[in-house]
Image 1 (cartoon, rainbow, N blue to C red):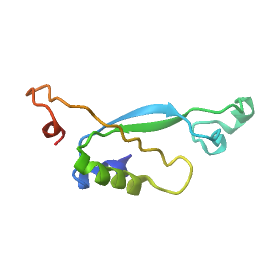
Image 2 (image 1 turned 90 degrees about the vertical axis):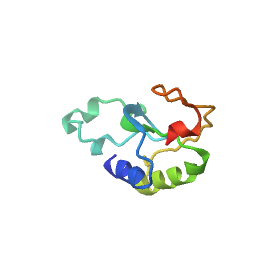
Image 3 (image 1 turned 90 degrees about the horizontal axis):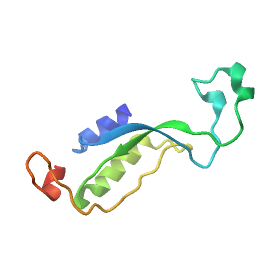
Image 4 (image 1 turned 45 degrees about the horizontal axis):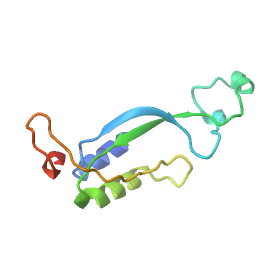
Length: 109
């Protein structure tokens, strides 16, 4: 998370929200590598697909900054291994700055 935060800030994209979430990909997860699991309890844990602790970032940018945001996040997080994450791009209809009442792209800078 620290590398992502620094990379986004250096790319001129310092404003985002990050929150802890639980999630999973296609795999079941490798509990032997999980630091929070006591090895003595591994046999008691179901082999069903497991939810893992992850971090979700919400970053809203203008269309002009979309490519740099995607490139920055990939560069900071790509290891080539399972679990590197996903980037989902969704069109935003509008945005409003509550403090001033402004709307549109100006609120994203």
